[in-house]
Length: 279
Image 1: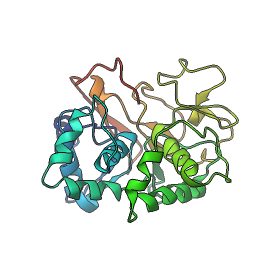
Image 2: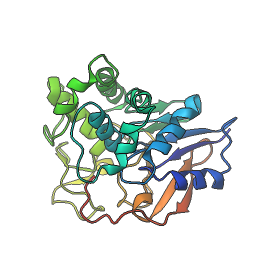
Image 3: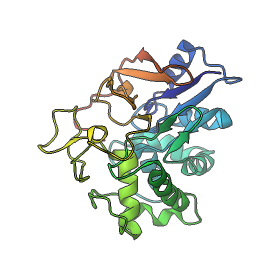
Image 4: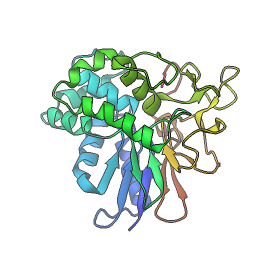
């Protein structure tokens, strides 16, 4: 059995199929981990959602910020001007079923046997695995509950910027979502920065990539994450970024994790220019 973690697809369904052909994926025996952002901006979000949903137990998917944006739109939040790629999902005859499936995806997946942890973006310095799992479960309970629509008006925003166990209510849930789905840079004291979106070295003074913070509580984990297309291939113990910018003309990456980690990259033609886009 082979296990592949796959980076941000964002509706690039044809490229996903080509990558699976490249690794000779066999759903009868292989397994897939998706690092979130299945949808948005690429041409085939609907086809991507249907495909991953239909894999059932063969696949694990964590939620990314674009997936949450789709959920918000499905529950009444307005779409942005560049969100036309989401309309086919919202208008599909099976759209409600796909949305219900998506809102039941986790924010974190940990496999002790394989020794890997999957998130979309990152973990703040204060969180070890146990705390990260507990925080993920708090948001998942809301998303999977009877009134998920009540959360989405409070989901967007950059504050609070620092973890405290005393955080409560919508601020606590917003901070948790921002860490799991938007985090790139933070300070040594744990303060987060959501303004810097480029590669390391482009950030504001005093901030570092979240995985370079000295003594972070998750340093003993092997963490696979997406979200950061400008990061590039980063080789450091326990750090496995796999968003290689498929949407922007980079690559779609699969990381095999049932053996010594092995990257397989499919060159992509590019669907959009990154100019003007955020996150």
